[in-house]
Length: 150
Image (tube, rainbow, N blue to C red; front, side, top):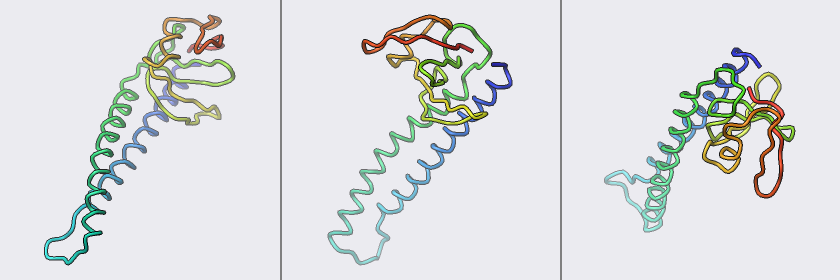
């Protein structure tokens, strides 16, 4: 895998994280608007209850927003230079699946290959850190072999 391929993977990862962040921001705005009852409007007790619930949800969404911003920041900061040792920015393949190390992400596709992100502090991320293609690692009692490290 060359530098251009890894840059396309990073660009897709950043785009995915940006889309998720934008969607959360829109949801936060919508929920914030739903939690407000305009002054002078007449309302029923149920309206106040729903507004309170929307406000509570907004606080939870703010936490999600912060986490998604951190995921985007991590994706943007990845050094995707070609490598033969697993670390942040490495692309690894094992058990027929492909992953980007150093950032948590759901599945995304680049050049016909589906990738997911692996956080460096996850059990798999910790088990593969520093390994090379052909090395074996064990997670949850199951042995795996790294087919590719790029």
